[in-house]
Image (cartoon, rainbow, N blue to C red; front, side, top):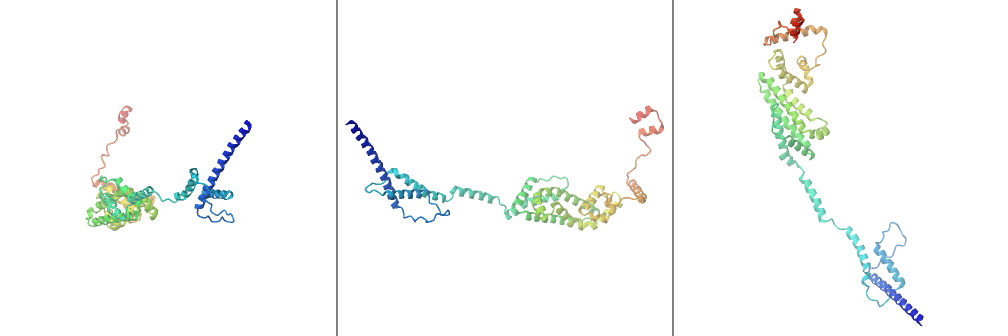
Length: 369
């Protein structure tokens, strides 16, 4: 009896558990069947499988599997609404539906603000042509004026760093062509004024004033060319295939030297024939400067240029030695006539005098001391 009762109890508990499992399974199937009825009808699947056909999201695939299982077993009537535990399926569907929405979200306002901020900073650094004409070129114009009019060796209160920075910014902002044009025009106007002043000079001051103008201009180039070196490197050398210093020297040649060479050369030859009419340093500066500007001008006065520039004349010949000696003697006479004495040639050095007189070794040693 006891064994039969235990079997009945065991069979009763097992039957209860089986009944509960069957009820839970029926509840799940009923909930899935109710949700499937709420969904719109799905199109029939394609007959042929292709690799290029779009794949369904994972949530839809799960629903399709669950719906197939429900149709096989069939729904059971009289069951209540789906339990709360079945909310997992709803969460899966919501996550699948929300995925495309996240991908299509608009950019955040912070990203837009960052882009606008960087754009505004870039636009703030742009130098327009109006900014160049009103702010940057006036600074360069004033500095060039001071450099062109300063005397050699003078100090001028300008900031070379500020001028170089202005040139650098203008080149970076694509104003090189305008800046080069303004520089050439500025220096051309200055040289034309210098040429007019030389034309009004009297003959006795003509050579000195030409020497001053030449030295002043060449000294200014030593500062102007380095200040515009960035423009020279990235515009003149690259696009024009020239050099800024050569261009500026050519300006002096065209606007000053060529206009005055035929008035200057006769005065130089006259000054050469009259010793010390002008200082030797002035004569040397002018002759070397003219040779730098245009070497062809040597043919106008080869003898004059040969005194200051080597290898101008052809090599000397033995037949011309007497002529060279006569020129040296003439130079010595000219020096004597202008107060340059030779000195007392009768006195010898102490050692030489003792040696010539044949004095004792002791006296000779004192003389050499």
